[in-house]
Length: 152
Image (tube, rainbow, N blue to C red):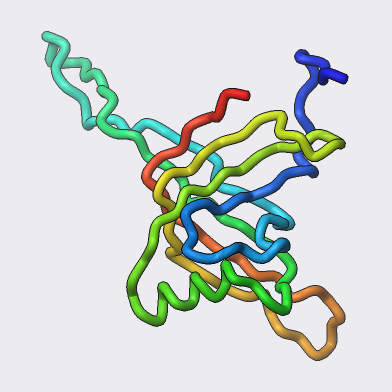
């Protein structure tokens, strides 16, 4: 059954897939609680002259991409986390392509974006608190070269 083309997509069913690893990713390494940073903007120049002294026109200067931020409950084992810690420990980074896909009820992709040459720039854990029984949340922040929508 085809989705209604004029209905907005729901953002609660998605996957994050890492490509280019030397090993096989753990099955939980595509499951995240949230993904943010899917954004791009144009930085403008200070403005040039349009021929008058009273007005300046800002011109497009470069594209700026937000960092991709991934959050999830901390799994006991993760090849992705091992790779991230190895990058930080050895200060050697192996950029990977990352696919973020919005999925339908049958886990088929409805819309996807490919993030090129992503590498970790930050890793953190939520607060550890003896007075709370909340899930420990791991956050991974990635810098990337660019991203493009994938045509399905």
